[in-house]
Length: 136
Length: 136
Image 1 (cartoon, helix red, strand yellow):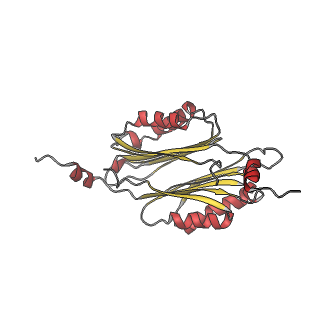
Image 2 (cartoon, one colour):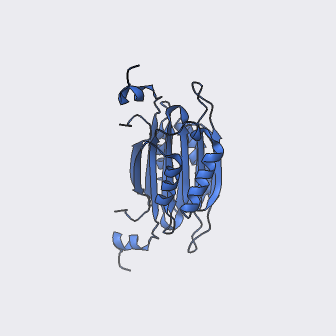
Image 3 (cartoon, one colour):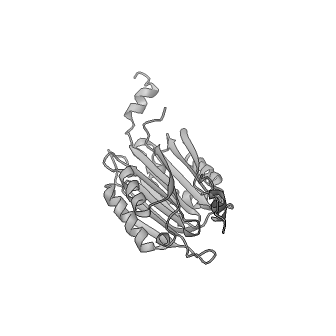
């Protein structure tokens, strides 16, 4: 049997499509980002918009800091990978991660949905390939 | 009262230290990355090494593909933010995210721990600032 090249071997590996979009959001409404219900609905809404499917969602409300109510963390395990939202009301700051696999989901639309709900005065946005196509 | 400059206003905002290290790992042992117990222990071990504190950990085992056992997703909500591990045995592939806030935690050490347990033949590693210090 002829020896296979790296390229041939790679072509036998199932291709995984994975896209991770994430951002740091500044200048948020302090009160809004302490609201677990609002933030949970926002994450659930983003999954729907992005055509992702929630397996399990976990929330944690943290203790306050300097008389400002505590921040919130929400992470959702989705069929397509995960969504994570962390907030720091004392800094009017939050970060969002949407990492979805498969060709059908729309992580950018999900991110945009959260951004519109939180209305940051400023943000830094990142997008990275988490699939296995760029191995070599 | 004198008008405050942007720099002065920014200096009043509490600084959040946040570091997100993540990677795409190729050429993994297919059997090992279907093993929910092994992977859960690996994530728990990484949190310990990285001086992070688990709030809640969620696992999901997916259905198999082409006679290869299914992949696994593990996401951990930690006091410091989150850890996520997703595996695709049919592609000998996994991705790891360790995102931790605070000056005490050691996300690189946690990542290295997972890397040593999974022994990828190749990987792509990324590191990004998720804190609010680089606003301007």
